[in-house]
Image (tube, rainbow, N blue to C red; front, side):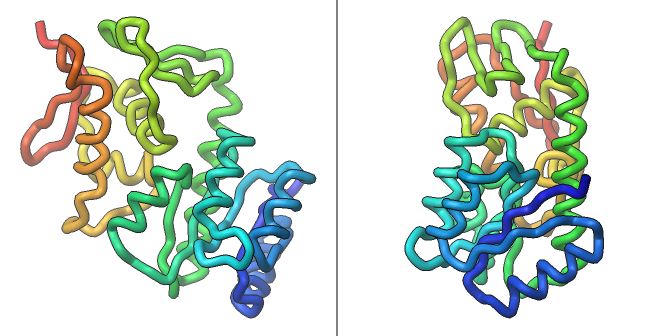
Amino acid sequence: MAPKILLVEDEKKLANTIKAGLSEHNLEVITAYDGREGKDLFFSNVFDLVILDLNLPFINGKELCKTFRSKNSHVPIIILTAQNILDNKLDSFDFGADDFISKPFEFRELLARIKALLRRTEFTKTVTSEQFLSIANLELDLNRKEARREGIKITLTAKEFQLLEFLLRNKDKVVSRDEIAKNVWETEFDPQTNVIDVYVNFLRKKIDKNFEPKLIQTHVGMGYIIRVDE
């Protein structure tokens, strides 16, 4: 069965072009041209992935993304926007998006992002028997999407959770920024972009600032590692 994608885009020409292109790659696309229609379709269907424009009539993309994420914490969401600004990218991840693409974009880039997210989702389904990742007094519940330190629940955004999961899956190993970009953001960042460093700092403030031992460490010029120093 072909993966089912919800595309919410008010530029009809662009929406129809995306739909036609994805259909050629065995992807089923259902299109909505405003936020209200997109919300109705999401709540009446089961989708494998969502592509969502930010500037939409009736309900904007930010609010729609939050609504989708509150109903389904697992479905991958890609944000489309005409504004390639770092703050917009960070905001997109904070309100639940998995990826961010700036307009104009090449179709093959969008297709690559979609395939990467669908592969990740399929992989997650195959490891449902694995529920917990842990180090020291930090525990990550993969099924409930919760983090706890010393038994205290820590609220993480979707992207912070994915970053922490990747670090824990590679605990005691230094992971580079490139590895994090490819595995957490499913993309390659401009070397001048500090999105990863910003998110590592977000994570440190939540899981390390008020607890001992400190777990997330920086290896200058190499990347990050999560470990317990002896």
